[in-house]
Image (cartoon, rainbow, N blue to C red; front, side, top):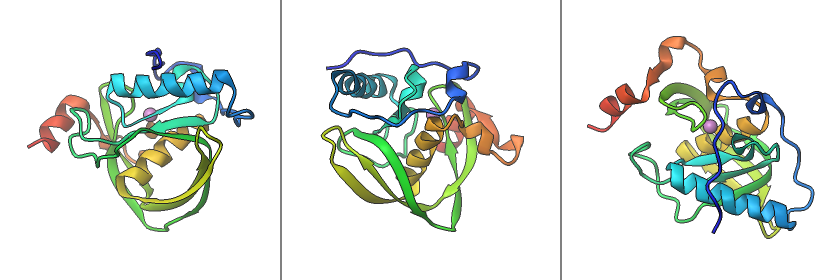
Length: 176
Ligand code: NI
């Protein structure tokens, strides 16, 4: 089991840097970082967490969508998925707006436009190259986390500051 790492927040310059490709997926350090990222995702009730959010500028993130108090309507993924060196191959022209939050921007939610579906590939921790089609909320998580690897946060993509609300008001709106 990994350990819980500190999640850095907006204002920390690390969040604005571009992460580097992982060269040796099977190295002890990378495998340990993946364990720690998964443990931290579970502990913080996140649906995704990217390595730069725990101060490691490597192209790795975790996706672990499941309904929880932060995202009551999230679809259920059975296991956390580690995504290493992700690549986008195709995306739908269709754009969909949806609410997002971020462990690095606590207390805030924003309505963010994203591609409705995407075709991507990545390596898992066993160095297997996987190709997947994602749509809806999972595609949204993927795009949000990929942005972190490029120094982008969801606030950068919001078209109108009126589409930024607090988590308290968000939960009132969407948990009825
Ligand atoms: Ni985030």
